[in-house]
Amino acid sequence: MVRLRLVLGHIWENISIVNIRDGHWKDFQITNPLSSSYSTVEMVRNSFLLTQDQSGRPGKKTLIIESTNSSDPLKAGEVISFIIGDTRQGSGGYLVAPALSTIQLLVEEKLNNASDWERAYTDSLYPTVETGGVTLKRFKVIADSTIKRGNNVNIKVQALQNKDSFTSSSHLIKNFTGTIEFSSDDPNAYLPQPYTYTLQDKGVRDFTIRYSTPGIHTLVVNEVGNTSRNGTSNPTIIKRRNEWYSDYNVYWGSMHSHTGIGGHALHTPNYAYEYARDVEGLDFYGLTEHCTTGSNNLYFDWSILKNYGVKYNIPNEFIAFSGYEWTSTGEGHRNVILKNAENWDAVPCPYDAKGTYQITKIDRLLENITGTDSIFIPHHSAKTMATMNWSSYKDHPNQPLVEMYSWHGNSEVSGTEISPSGIGVQQYGNGFYVREVLAAGYKFGFTSDSDNHFGQAGSNTKANGVRYFGKMGITGVYAKGYNRNQIWKALQERRTFGTTGGRLLGFFAINKHFVGDEFTTDQLPHIKSILISNSPFVSVEVYRNGEEQVYYAQPNVTKFEFDWIDTNVTSGEKYSYYVKGIDENGDRIWISPIWVNYTTNSISQGMPSFGVEKSLNL
Image (cartoon, rainbow, N blue to C red; front, top):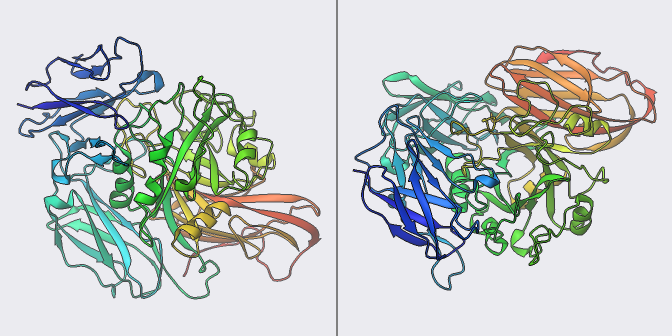
């Protein structure tokens, strides 16, 4: 029999743990010690439903169920649905299906007079619900994207249940105990010996390798004795000296995801930071819980949340930020990332004691934070759920970036196969899409992110029935070093690119000016770009001033370099250019714009003519 224990309350409150009777998914009722009334948990067609207490207060928003005995897992074909959170704030519930090996639910508690919330259990006692019918299908292999010759490359290998796609889930098999071996396209690479996973690895393990040959390399991992269970790493560039992009390294991160703080997501902040670092191998991460949602978020506690950027920061290993999501029905949603959140006391969005929203206008918000170390990133601008006001500031230093893509879908342009889904889509032509706002003269670099509601930034996990599109985005930055200051500088200077989740690589320059730059020149704009993926690129495009496609190629190669000169420019005009690539698997990469102020029609001699392109040879 499965013995369940219900934890009623919220991790921002004094948790009351109530043990209920043993039983196999039986109906039960418990008392809420924080109220004189009851919350009812009842089974409805194999699902649990947590109802609001009779007093009407929306206080109980988290239902955590623990399986203390895994001898009775779900059988193949069985599905249990957990409605976790306040449905009035968008919770659609989450299915625990046989495709999952486990679902892990963390519990935190705060002791009397303690300054922080701590886990209630050790790692070995984490609550999980086991499911059946899980088999290994593939490995996800995450590698450093850029490295100097002679340095070790960090590798993270995950054992996963299924193949990756835009709509399927890729769940970690935490009880994998098979043996893996390594191979590489660099015959002189120093590779690890075969390794046998243990239960303590929980399905993910770190390794280091060293490539000897400059160029672009990948690592292949397969299960010993079964080469059909394999995985190939994302490309790693072992840089030659004096390449035009060699001053920059690529680092990966996420700045938009949620946990149970806010009543409509799953897991805890601790889980989210550790997942980003230990499972997805992100270089930087910032949690952005709603400081308000459709109604006041009673559980947003900035005095605690702001400290996670300190708690989880590890110099030279993991850059942790803190932030929140600011929302306004008439002004849009923005993810707010703070360089040093622990020093930021005035969060300008919670309600006051009278229930009045403090700042509902983006212009006022930007005025208040001017000069601070903060970045505001517009989110899902093409959705109708919160009409986006881009603000009257077309180049505000605290709003240098825009989210091009998230699991809601694409905000670049309407009519694509990954156009926004879910709660309404804005009509193109009304100024809500990224191409339109670039055409209007706004200066935004690009990010992609997840808006993941499982505390799993960078992961393609998606529960059946959740209304969002599914695949998670990820942000790359170009930085000259790996520390908080350099990552922050790259974000401020728009030295960024976004992808739909794959670790595609791309570099882009105009007249030797790099991504994010603005410059004045009397030379025609000479564009140079490199795009790299494991899958062939089916299209590569350059857009001028947002909406004008001025370059298009169908290279059908995994490494593509092109030079192109824009001869159709007018002296005295300003232009922006960005590069987009789509590979055979449907993954996208969007490289942030470069802005050119062109002054004369003087054509430089010796430059490549229109449409010159070639395969990359590093």
